[in-house]
Image (cartoon, each protein chain N blue to C red):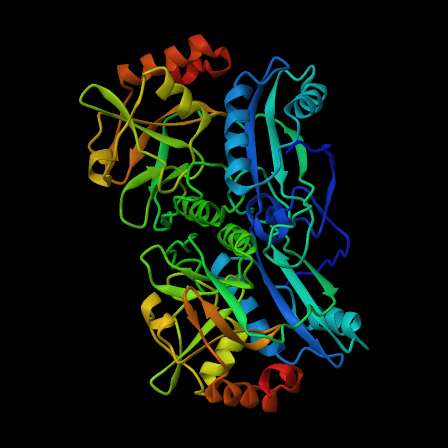
Length: 270
Length: 270
């Protein structure tokens, strides 16, 4: 499953299956001090996504060398890695001789909000598809359409439910709800993405998985979003509900910042 | 919503949202005698897909001129048209100033089976997502994975069910089942693609929409697949069930060939 990694920085063939069918996976990673502090977790998810889709994983050492070259000296930024099944055919059948193609691109760090996020409750639902749940594949029209709603509503992010009404996540972040003294996050086995930062929080025992209804989310003592680019961000508004700063959230942010200083955000955490 | 249509035949930017998120729609069309006999139906579906996804539709006259140029003198072939939201951003939010990008490519006609098709019953299900049902968008991982199953099973195509067990279609064709003297095809309002040839058959009153269970499909008097590249193809095997030639199928193929001679196939229809 090792391939000789072609990296192309400015173009990909129009017969690339990523373009034709979203036939690929990606990772969006925070660069800090010329490194990717969460790389092992990103690589693990990339590996799992490639396995689930049957895409050959390029030699990680080769990817790592190319990444190191690209982020060397970059104090801060966002690195996007895209792995597709490569070129092949007009039809859906994955070519037996497919040569996976991958590419990396470095982007500036997006502006970080220093106020709580306002969440729109999206009409767009996440379809239930266990075969694709958890991995960060490139079939993202649901998120694109949901994010369009968020923009039109003038909000910062959106709360997404699955087609049976369970709360799943935001459009580009996982959800953390503080209830009865515990931080909870919905499972991602039916749909949604297993966020890298969510995975770290679960592994540390700081957050637990739990099914959440929209009512339970609105009723939470504190609400936050997390992802591997922005860290943990407080939610200040959802529907009719407002939240002020909460000590449990300050504490959770502090725990994260201790392990990963790049996520220190005095304007939010202080 | 008209844009100045850029056609690039060999490359697209790696920041194209089709590549990043499958953020686009496509059409796969049969070329015959230097023309696209089903173009008006393809254009209608393209228009509907662009509308549903909020992608600006290029001026059809501009597309048509480019297509005419490309297929001029081509006696037979398959033309693929891909329309994406264009370049833009690292995030899911559709850029407000997105410049849609489209491309066309001409491929040889695939070999046409002259025996009945053997269908594999796919484990991979189609998720229920009304917001994306019917249109031919570029989020096709379900079909890619299902088609992988078909290949491994050594079959020609696959029968796909939705996540609640209803029969929907094949991986790249609609399904036609003959029961009680009528041709039936499942609805595509929850998932699946509204095939152009399926649309023509419905409009002619030759086929009706009906929910079908796997049992009802296995129990059909005749079974066929249809799409706009291959026409109507008989199914000879599904699970434990075999079908021989059926006069209702010969009749349906003849009706199609009368309207669209490109779909005459003596080896199948005779």
